[in-house]
Image 1 (cartoon, rainbow, N blue to C red):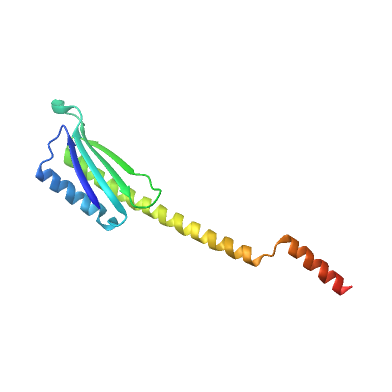
Image 2 (image 1 turned 90 degrees about the vertical axis):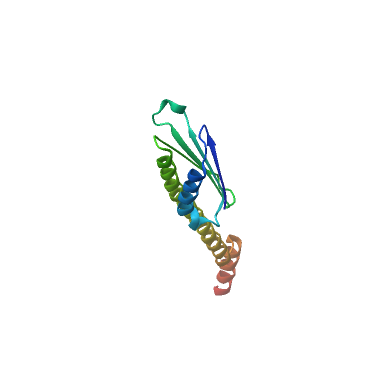
Length: 140
């Protein structure tokens, strides 16, 4: 799992970087093989004016073919709180996406097996008519 952190109008100190790494390690470590890249962007939207303006955006790219990136945005007055909430949401969202992909694959696999079995068991309509005609001719 590749991991990148960047800041917009916020200096990403080593302490903040370690906090972000730790939060995302706890949230996403169990899905390490399924996650290709995690990009974290933190920022201060309106600078020193204050308010709910700390922003954390996460983009998680999964290795599964055809999966779209998972994007999570969180805002808070405190940057660490925004990172904490975003990491929790990222863990839940990745788990849900992988579960859906697993069920989709299982469903498609079952369907293809069932379709192959039903095609082998049922004779074609022409064969059925020919067999019925032969059975009728033999019995009379």
